[in-house]
Length: 240
Ligand SMILES: Nc1ccn([C@@H]2O[C@H](COP(=O)(O)OP(=O)(O)OP(=O)(O)O)[C@@H](O)[C@H]2O)c(=O)n1
Ligand SMILES: C[C@](O)(CO)[C@H](O)COP(=O)(O)O
Image (cartoon, rainbow, N blue to C red; front, side, top):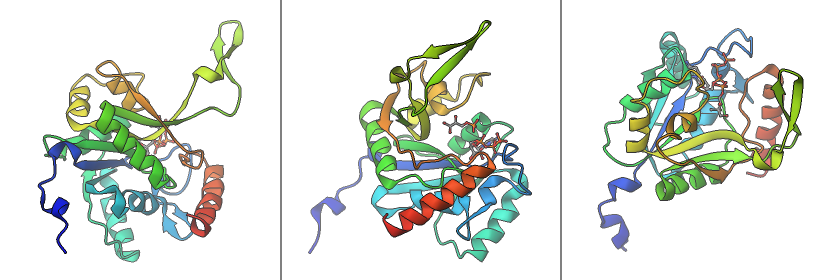
């Protein structure tokens, strides 16, 4: 039987895109190769990440992977070795994450839609978080996954340090999702010296809506993160 919904042309505003930034060199990891290529349970970190966004229920139309220009052949070889069938474009990264996102964005020709920017080194993001962030960006223009801090937090001052009210703080994760037009406008502004994420680029143009992230949505940064990530991945394979 025909599903009449599937015959309707899709509203271009609902189209979903994803830019996975993996253009860094992983200096804090100090490994023999960029951390996105290290293996978690026998597969590269970046392949785990790519698979999260290729989850069919998310309906992502186009996946753009941003890589260091000198690592294209490494990735090609890994795709062959692991028989990667997920369609994706590969774009050269820049000297900073900001430049890498800008390059990924330039690759998307669509005039409208919602785009997720995600760290290539967050391989454990639950589908629920990705879906909720896309959905919130569609409704609010800009949405970012975040979690409540578990530790106490102190700020630094000339005397030493002072207590911050953690009830008013959130730890920011990716995905960070935006209407395509908004993110394009934000990336036309000059690069921020204080840049750490896409929300900080967009916030002067548009309020940032926070979505509940997940403590398992780890960013692999230093060696011990690999141990934790493998343990979480193993647990997710048992109970997704
Ligand atoms: N020029 C850059 C720098 C970073 N990234 C990406 O942005 C994400 C978050 O950055 P981070 O964890 O800082 O990665 P690295 O820059 O590789 O690590 P480090 O800061 O330790 O060198 C990573 O997926 C990284 O590959 C990028 O695409 N282009
Ligand atoms: C984008 C990010 O993952 C949000 O927490 C984070 O800001 C990246 O920081 P990094 O210093 O580039 O690892």
